[in-house]
Amino acid sequence: MKKTFPFGLPILPVGQVYDGMPKKLFILGVYASAVHVKWYGPDGRLRIRAMAVASEPEIFWRGGNDYVQEVIERINLAPEYGYLAPADEAFNGPSGRCLDENYINPLGLTRDDVWLCDLLPESRKNISQEKALKKQYDGFVDIDYNFPRLETPIADEARIIEIVSELETSGARRVVLLGDEPIRYFLQRFKPEIKSLSSVVPYGGEVEFSVNSRQYTALCLAHPRQTARLGKSNLYWFERHREWLAGNVKTEK
Image (cartoon, rainbow, N blue to C red):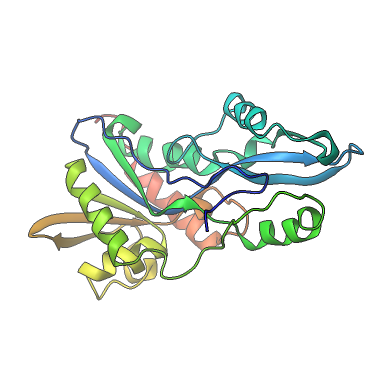
């Protein structure tokens, strides 16, 4: 069955657009986020304050209400279902903004220098979104959707082959892994003894690994969810990343 968001837009894969230039860094995240809107009922009351309704326009999107408005116009919601408005800034592009501020720029790089990738290049709903949809959308809106939850394994063997292909295309030999999932589902296949972020001491320590006879260096860091305190997060990893930033900020490429 085709995967779709509430209100019917398709869930599309989001990935790096190859510009033909070799990259200095390959960054591997978990899964794609989405464009979020506020949904008001026909009575003008807020039903859902941050509702995922479309795939991001680019991987690790940094947000922007102009694009959110384009999405709202594409949905063209019928009046009997109310109306949509851009969600608060905090709900659109927070991981992308955090990636620039807490990973790419401190290493003396820009987006042009990096190749971005996710274990799963599609958006998935979280528990909070599922609860909100069951309470506010299901049974009220007669527009079917198929918005799956994240399942394990996040990346199967076929996806790992695709990620390796992206890594080789990027030309990068240095890899940043964002949190436990990229370590568990990617790095551990090539470096079995590294099972989680806690396995790498000190925080931000580099791990050498080999793929298809090529040598790479992995920099294992916390996910932006932790380093930007997005939703439920762990203060321990936030503090470790602050310490890492203090000792690793570069001003020149």
